[in-house]
Image 1 (cartoon, one colour):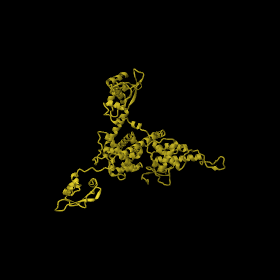
Image 2 (image 1 turned 90 degrees about the vertical axis):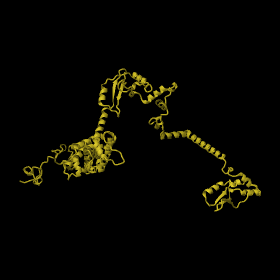
Image 3 (image 1 turned 45 degrees about the horizontal axis):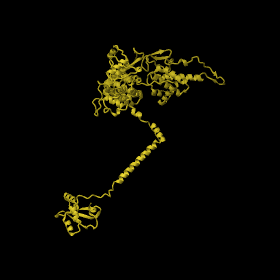
Image 4 (image 1 turned 120 degrees about the vertical axis):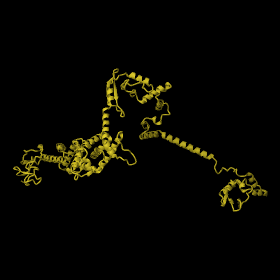
Length: 633
């Protein structure tokens, strides 16, 4: 008995095929035969007419003949049928064969707009329609894969996609990282099902992933994406690169299932990046950014270990902290969001019994104090007592005259507080009005109440003095910027002052002031005596008696003068002190002021006491009054 050459199975003779057929794989033993019917071929019935004529057709108004099927309508139908077959082959290649009817419908609508031609452009339109159908079904768009199938660049395919969307007036659904999770899950499962030698990843990484629950990792990734999509910053992070973000989130979810970081992060990033046709660097950057964000969330939870900020190297890595606390922090943030929605402020309109108006009661819980469910049930079950607004106002005034409001507007009246329950301080007016009432009640005279108080007066009354009020409290937030003039206003004001002559008057006053200042300085300068004109006062160190005897004309006077000590005569005892201190043998020359002709040479010789030798000395000329004043002063 013959066997199949392909699989080795048993064969069976078939009369219709006139050949032996393998019962296992269906291969024909005789290669010259072929399958007469193929059930896999699907032909769209709306473009197939089994009764189409096959005779010659005479063209109206002409003398030529044409075969059936060469008209414009027939060509369009044939091209449409061919493109439908091409679309079905693309959907089978991408494993989304269920989207082929939607893609064919979009393609027919796009071609009916007569904005696209048949041929290469029609193939690009088919690829764009397939991308739209993938987005609508919640799957990745696979633009690069589709561009390879239609033999176009991804840039041209994106341009064609934009043209198709504008022609059909269709909104393009935004891409979500959750769309890539199914693809990542199936790819990872196929890797783990294959042998270690042919899986394409590290052996240690394969052994680590083999022990993890892939389904739980996908559920954690979905929860992570849901939490990220609820804030503006994280939403922009998701929309930046959905494929890279999905890869990073799935890797972090796998580390969460392991309760620790994976051994080969670069290898698994490369594996997922090649699948989603993104760069490995993009996946690594998204992974680092998400780790930083999760570590910031963990710091907000008190019972979780956070990553310490120290200059030294820490013992526990940030990846380990994020892997251990990711599930807890996601559940915590989800519970916070659910509580914020459940306890959100809802306006309740309840009619007031004594008045025809309605009272608006808005209950808005604070973000710091969220009441429990037991407290809410107790407050709802308790019967509230309605009190007239005038009685409530009077009660507040008697309890706190300086803090309660003096009147209330009936159009914006709040619900009157019951005696047991809500605090009355929550139903009062604003702090500004309370300070105004406090000032009016604290005024010493009635005349002070005729003018509205300033902010300084209000704060001084409220705090017990103006010394405790700071300067920055005198202006409200944004008030200083509001009173400042804009550059345009300053330009208009300057032009107006120039037209009115205000700027000329200011310049004239400034010039007059500068002129007066210069005149005053000149007068002060002229009133002071010149330094050259001021004579030196007589020095108190000169012995006047010795000087008078020195000026005598008699010989006795000269003798008496030379008997005196020269240092005492000339008042130069400071030179003796300096020479004694220095102990130097250097020659000291002292010049008189205004005349360098005369000089006193003081020299010390060994063995001889200190003495002053006067060289080239001449007596003063007669007839001069006190010539020594000019010489020695």
